[in-house]
Every structure is written in C-alpha cells, then in structure tokens.
Length: 562
Ligand code: HEM
Image (cartoon, rainbow, N blue to C red; front, top):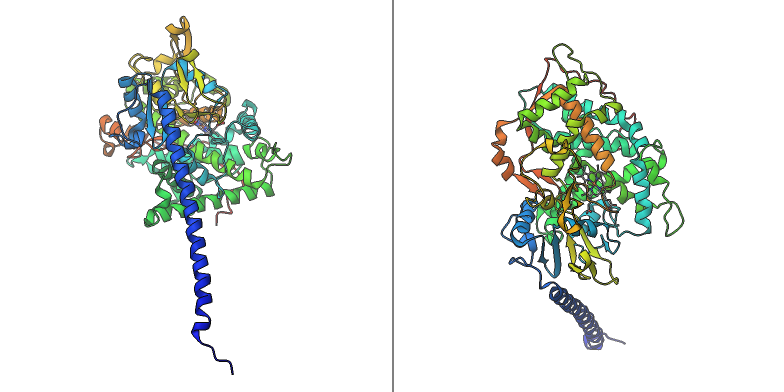
C-alpha cells in the first residue's frame, strides 16, 4: 500500500517556492532598475536644463521652490512679486527636478502667452493632477489642463460659443434671479448678523453656473436659508475642491494613507464625481435649452473618433466648469465688497451711479427698479471698481504655467533675450505683474479712477518697443488659453454687485480685525481668498428690502441628489 511521506512532496514544493522567489527578485530588480534609470535620466535632464539657465538670477532657496522657501505657500501671490522686485523680471527657481523660469517682463509675457510652442502640458504633473483627479474618476484631462490639441479646440469652441453675447443675454434673467436670491438671504439675516460674504458669493456663482451651464437650480444660495447643508451641491463641490487644492499644495498627500483627512478627501472626491455623473446622466436624458453650455457640450464631435463626445470626455469637462468658475467669481465678488467697504468715497460714487439709473433703494423709492440688460453698459463706475478689484486681488494670480511642447526644442523669446529650454516650465504670475511698481503708479492703492482716465489703462507704453503699448493687466490671462468664461464672469460680477449695492451697504464685521489683519489672512491655494472668510454686515438702505423676482432659477432642481 502507498504511504505518503513529507519527503516525497517537500522538494517539489521547495522547488516551486524557489522559482517563485527568483522570479520575484528578478521582477523587483527590474522594476528598481527602471525606476533608478528614470530617476538618473531625470537628474541628468535637470542638470542639462539647469546649465542652460545658469546665467539667470536664481533663488537661493530649496528644492521645492516657493513651497520650500521661507514663505508660507499660501503667500505665493505676494511672494512672487517680492522676488520680481529683488531679482528682476526674469529669474529661475527649482521644484524638485524641474526648473521654472519666472517672468514678469510684460513684453516677454505677452509674447509667451501667445507662443504656439508653449503649451499647457507640463513636464511634471504635480501641478495639474490634483485638478484632473477631481474632475473625473479616470483623471482625464479637461479643457483647463489639456494641451492645445484638436480635442481641446472642439471643447473650447463649444464652451466659447455658449458664452456668446446672445446666449448670455438669454441667460441674464436667471443670473439676475441668483442675485435676487442672495438679497433675500441677506434681508432675512438682518444687519446685526455677520454674514460670510465670501461663502455667500461663491454660492451665488455656483447657482449661476448651474443655470447658465445646465439649466439647473443648484440651490446653493437658497440653502443658506434652509440651513440643511448635507448632501447639497455646494457642500460636495466645496469639499471636492478643498481636496484638489490640498493635493496641489502637497503632491505626496495621496500616499499618506495613515491620515484620516486623506481618506476623507478621497471620499469627498468620489462624492463630487458621483454628483457630476448624475448631472451628466440628467442632461443626456433630457437635453437642456440651447442657450446652455451643456447643449453645446452635447453637440461636440470628438475629432479623434468622428463620433459624438463620450461620457469619459464629457464628465470631466462638466466637473471642470464648476471647479474653474464658482470660487474664482465668488472670491472676486467678496474681495470687491471688502475693498469698497474700506473706501467710503468709492461706495458713494457707486450709489450715485445706481441712483442716477433708478437702481438704488431710497426712502423715496424703497423698491429700486429691476436691473435690466441695457443698464449694464451704463454702470461705468461699478465696472471700473470691479476692474480695480481684479487688478489688486487677482484671484487666479499665481498662474499661468506653460512649457515648450515636447520634441519641439527650446523656445526663444524676445528675439533671443530669453530661452526657455525644453523640459523647463515658464511661469508668468499675474499678481506679480498687476502689482508691479515698475508698471503701475501706487500699485497697492485701490483706485478705480485709474480705469476712467483717457487711454486704456490695461496697457503701458514700453521703451523697448519704441513707446508701443504692452499689456500689464491680465486677470483672465491672455492668448489662446485665456479664460474662456471671461464674459460670464464679468456679467455675473456686474449683475450681482449692482443688485447688492442697490439694496445694501456692506460693513466689515469687527471679528475680521483691521485691514492689516485681512491682508495677513490673504491665502492662495488655487485661488486667492481670505483665510477668515469675509464676514460682513449687510445694512439695508431702506427699512424693508425687497428682493425682486426670486422664482426658482429653473424648474428642475438637481433633484437626483438624494
Ligand atoms: C473672476 C473670475 C475668473 C477669473 C479671474 C478667471 C481666470 C482665469 C485664468 C487666469 C485662466 C487661465 C489659466 C491658465 O492659463 O493656467 C482661466 C482659464 C479658464 N477658466 Fe477662468 N476665471 C474666472 C471665471 C471662470 C468661470 C466662471 C469659468 C467657467 C464657468 C471659468 C472657466 C475657465 C476655463 C474652462 C479655463 C481654461 C481655458 C483653456 O485653457 O482653454 N473661469 N481662468
């Protein structure tokens, strides 16, 4: 009879185990070798790029550029300006193995932002992967982060058409309703309550994007009154964006799995994906009106396939529009409210202008006339106030970043004055240009009057160009990749602020401290905001403020948000 003894099996077992171990060691070794050679190649490329830039002033700071220097990363919008003053309009710094060339010379900036060989695909993804991960589960590139290729052209054309004057005019009543809802919220809160106007204006902007973009009422402003925030579009969007910002600031964050906030951030990102997925399913099921961005997005033909745009491409574009639009416009509105609250003379001129158009609540006429589309072009002074706010508080002040297209070689600017080597990043921080004492008189002074003088204050004559004008004001960036939604942002700001100032005067709450305290609380993650929020008292101009029409923005609330 056959009897089993361990000796008969063990050698075979050991044999298999040894083969597996050898295989593992070989695969692991190969992986290590590949990583090592990649690393060495990176270091070599960094050294090569560094050699080409060594004649330029270099920051004596660490490997992490602004993140590693002595400044707080949140101060970047100010720090870049200080660097420009100290080291001049061209300087370099390093972020790990990537060299960055920071330029604030307006002639070079204008040329660079229009240069066809400088694009948005950066040699390192730290800067954009936080955004791509937020906009879709497969981290697809969006209109904001794509290189300037055929697909980008198709998406950009669709979105830009959606912001045509005709479409915005058709959407104007909805934009006005979002402002009216905000007035209703503030009227109900009363003057004694310090309202965080930054939060409030971000909500109003989210509602405007929901309406103009998708014919949906996101309910973000109204939910301030309801008080029921859980599961709301605004909470989901804010939490998702906060996580994306954290990943941009700390590229290693995703690996810190021992931290509960990292898991909470992953969950927030997932919830944002789900919200956008539901919205996409809604617009696929029922096409929104033709004047919405969604209708234009649905009509895109993917140039790579010749077919209608797929969900994989569509979802990130939708997500990105909320992401790019709600905080930028919201923060800009609250910085404007703040700046005006510090300048009584400026507010007096705003009210004078509104009164001359019958748009101001007064004791004689407590219900101001409803703002109309044709009024907008008459609001010259308020428009100058917004422009000045965008100059001093450039919410997107730490971008743009561009890089020479891979394989196209180094990019020469200014007729040889500056060469951007392939593999380096060009950084032209808007805030440093718009606050440069070399380009502006008294740049820190909030002076809307500079926009009312003869000539175009957006430009400055340049000696190198024989006195020809060069751009020094670019809050929406310039060139092919400027802000596609500039017309919507400008319309939203003008409409909301005209309505708000028509009914209220805004006083900074004492808990915000002094102007120095607010300045010390300025912070830039992706956009410029105030770390304390913007607590203000909205004091009604007349005893009973009426909000005007506050019908729902659209019949169809983002109701599938169970
Ligand atoms: C005050 C408000 C706003 C400011 C100051 C602003 C500023 C900017 C800037 C500076 C850029 C260029 C970024 C770069 O080159 O890296 C940009 C791009 C972009 N913005 Fe805005 N933005 C605002 C509002 C909005 C809104 C409301 C939306 C959408 C609803 C939006 C959507 C976009 C998109 C899609 C791009 C990428 C365009 C492209 O690369 O082709 N922005 N914005």
